[in-house]
Amino acid sequence: MRSSGSPRAGRRRTALRTTAAALSLATAALLAGCASAETSPRSSAKPQAFEPAAQKDGSRITVWTDSTRLPSVQAYQKSHQDVKMKIVGYDGGADGSTYLQSKVQLFDRTGNGWPDVVFGSPTDVTWASQPTKPGALPFAAPLDDKLVPQSTLDGFAKGSLTPCQFNGHTYCMRNDIAQVVLWYNKSLMDTWGYKVPTTWEQYESLGKRVAKEHPGYLVGSVGDTNSHESYFWSSRCPAFDLVKPDTLRTDLQDPHCTRTAKLLDGLISAKAVTTKGFFSQGFAKDSGSKVMMAYGPSWYGQYLFKAAFHTPARQIAAAPPLTWEGDPTVATGNVGGGVWMVSSHSANLKASTDLVTWLTTSDENQASAPTYPAYSKAAKAWLANPANSDYFAGDVSDAFRRAAGAVWTGWSNTRFSDATAWSSVVLPALTSGKSLTSTLPAWQKEISNEAEAHGYKAVTR
Image 1: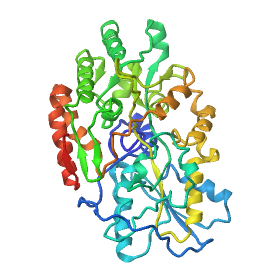
Image 2 (image 1 turned 90 degrees about the horizontal axis):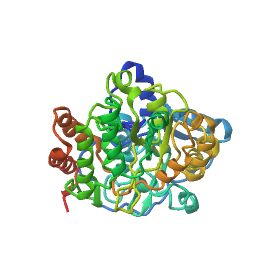
Image 3 (image 1 turned 180 degrees about the vertical axis):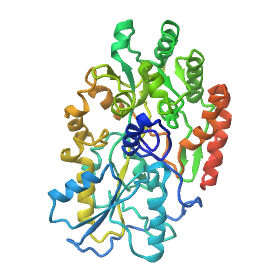
């Protein structure tokens, strides 16, 4: 899941033994943010103009990849035997690991050892795009500076490269995204005569109706370490809004936050939304079959309903993101997605950028990828692959595509995980019976404290 929750991992999770395999895949599939190896403020110095190292076309490139992406790198090597490669496996930034950053800091000191290409999480880009000292090059090369054609960069889903962009340049290429959609059990909905909601207000009304007519059945969960990304991010809540590179705005009293908290409080009180995590110990066994709806990432279908809950095929379907009545903006969250970076120190930028471009944009690779490609053309090939669609009750293509272009870019990529404050403050409060609305001030304070600890100025307006 995303690092968290998302099949990825830099920001969260626990699971029972029977769903361990599903969680492992999910965590590996998505990547999400984590804390840095050093918490000192990033350098305020602007990076110098990119001047490539002396190039040696044909020289060997070193590629660092996680285990999930390893087969893709190996496939490239097999089909491009003229390219000399050394492939190194590492954790890929999962579960908040700072291994890559620590090693790069060491290489910066010794002046050698940098890998040419690395897979990582969006949070890795926050430090990799910044110089470690005035006049120095960031670790990541600016791919839009004569390395990757702008036409290629323009082919990614709207907003999906935002986590890659700093100081006017693009420092990574997005491997996959985890846009949030409305998942629902079509078999149950049809049997009970329920209509799929299109607005949050309809979702709320249906949830309360389900709780009354079919006690024990659920329309969602707020108990996972990434649940806030599905609900609050989708509502355009300014919890992580970088108004300046060094200034983070967190205003959880904004109406876009309070409306979500109020709606969820009502559903939690009605027992339609659970405070237990979908991936918590025992949930799949005890309640997996009673999840009628779930607002969550595109990987939920394969990794939650199929692999963890073992819901039979042809029952689960997906609908586009919900909207708020009176609010014309269609927005959704994102719960995962990894990135590929090319080192600014690489002596073979041609081979390095060709590899990263193939990995992220080629139908040959992405059509069989575990999660939804960020590159729009490759996403079409992914959706056309029966392995990614045959399980569902209907065609998920429209919902996935619409959501992919609606991920709100106001939830910023920061140097620390957005999951820690939610997990350390909000989840314990919900477990103890407190409401989301009453917990918003404490959540906001914890986010602000984390921001300041990582060198940001924290503001509310």
